[in-house]
Length: 513
Length: 88
Image 1 (cartoon, chains in turn red, cyan):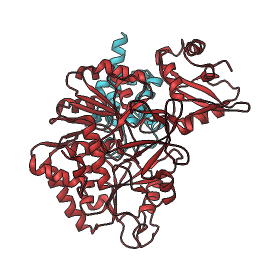
Image 2 (tube, chains in turn cyan, yellow):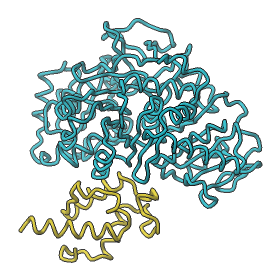
Image 3 (tube, helix red, strand yellow):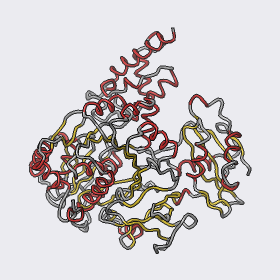
Image 4 (cartoon, chains in turn purple, cyan):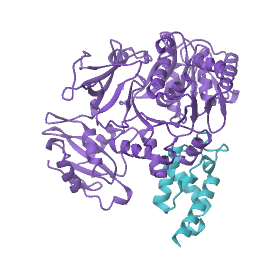
């Protein structure tokens, strides 16, 4: 397949329609409520196009829709895009305030509460548009400056907490689908389970990868309803999985090694949205010894750009090699490309057709992020001598202790090897003398709470790390702050650290100081 | 579950305390309508164990068991009863 040729003029919906002609009876998407072949999905999209036309949705309009983890949601997305309108997916339980803010920003023609598009489940925003609270907005279409070819705007919360609207073109959607499809080497009969929400880039893009190749999507509602998840796996003969590290943790916690009972069936498992620590990789290697094990390093801004097969490779910093449409570089803080190695880090940056078109109505942030076509991340890393992209730390997470830089993941990886820890996080505490000093927050396993010995952990780390990397304090915590996708919120850990003076909170042990 | 000291009304109050933002009287199935999500269920299961030492086995983590406060009450009552039998 000439993947570059496919990037010209095709949308994901059009690719789906071509599969509806060539393999109409092949399963396209199954969810807990229904299953649709490619032909049925194509028909569903056409029905929604007709309904949207009745509602006077036209090219250039925005359509905001509350997400449900169902094939019908994907059908709605494609229908909106077929009309040349822009799809704006919303969180399932979006707070009213956030909905108002997004509506004021994008000024949608339509807000969809349920994908059946019945009158009682939609809100029309006619000319002289008002947001759901009744406030009348500008009569103009949003900005009038949205680039052509935009398929979707994904609103995401950045590390600053400010919501950003990331504009994704049709071309970018196809390109990211190619990154996924070729990266995982999908077999002809792949049926992949996707519990991750399809209003987020991770879940959505893995759906696109499957549709690109005419494979099968199996949706379920997260991993916590574990019995439902395994029921879907059995019912639809799932042979591939797309999970987040948080989902893996939940499954292991709830069901033990049950995932391992599928070892002979699962061809590949792919992980994304957050880093994967060494102990989880070891566990997955043990449970699924014959499966390909992939980790995606990516962002909503630069989709599925880098993929890593970690079956055999145990390098702690490697996050993979560039995907089929990606080119990586390492930039300094002026945006200039630098030579990098394990001692000389810079900002990881990625270029390719899968990149976003920019941030909606935020040209300044776009200029700061997209430099010469490269989407610059805030991740520090380097490219090693074999061409692997290596991640060291998020910019804000690196601890500068008296001029010595500490990458938290390195210390955390060693701490996890101590054993009997569910998770840990190394965070910076402001220090008058050294600038920052490292504190280690640990969450012991439940049955090890009373026996956890922080002094022993400190001695363990002292045998493995340079002195400046040793935490000056270890504190036990009940849990670490994470967002809805399971990503560790270091900023909030740092807030916890800043709040600790000499008061006792949980158990604490003092390090070398 | 009365034998563990909590009657139905008290249990419903407990639900509201643990997950105050959920509309427990919604006529629609709680998970299907999005009123309750899987992470809410995890949080509830954790609180149930912490406060009442009642464990919900993973085999019962199904959307149908969390369709309404009534189905949750039945589930938890059954789990409480099974827990007592295990202890005996």
